[in-house]
Length: 407
Image (cartoon, rainbow, N blue to C red; front, side, top):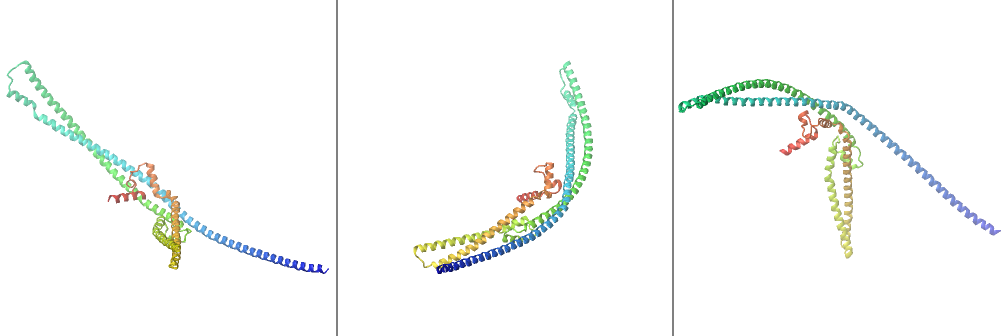
């Protein structure tokens, strides 16, 4: 009985300890669960706050983007009528230029005809002079003088008949020459009349051509003025796009600081120019990193070599130098990588902007000029500026480069 009480006592105490231990674990689990729930609530609250902040930021960005696109739409709506008018003026200018070309060719043909008539008239004049010389020789008289000075001592029917025939032929030749002279004179007068009529027609054509040229000059001036206006409006649209999307965050603080240092508006040439300017900085830090790395490797190899030889006389100094070079190399390397990443982001931003602006190329006035030239199929050697008074930026660049080479 006593033994049972003792066993019951110890068993009860064990159960109480186990129960207390179990209750303690339950409390800890509950506390841990409560803490986890609190952390989850706090995390959920933090997520909600981040979502709200992101939503507000995104809404602000969307609002800003919508305002920007509305502005661009306004610029585009103002630009499109000018572009349409510019395209119309291109064809009007081409039409007036073709009129001047046709008139010029007609005048050239008339000039060639007049020159041909003058050549024929000069030839007839020279021929008449030669024929007159033949008549002036008076070959008949010369024959008579010969007969008189050297009389024929032998007379016969044949000789007399021959003399008569020579005299008759000589008279016939003279009459034929005079007849040819009369014909040539008549033809020369006809040519002079034709030349007079052709010159009058040429003067009229020249006057009409000058009027067409003056009319074409007016069309070229109007087209040039419209081209300048369209170029400015299109440039404003491109600059607005470039500045808006080019100045957006790149993910690199350094690249963003470089972009912020560019004088507005942010344009594609300015981005690539900044990328080019930062190349020396990247190269400088790369060279510094390579030099520090070489010095670090040299001091590390020297420490290992001294340890193998058992020479510890400069160990502390060498280790201090090694640690200093390690930190300097790390710092310069981080800066070098930061610059490299920033330049990469800057270059990618330029390419993104270039691709985006490329979608607007069909709206630029130069494209309208190129398409008009293709329609008329003028060929590569066609002088656009001579025809319509303007040329594309590409053609102007080629012209100045060729002019520079010929200096």
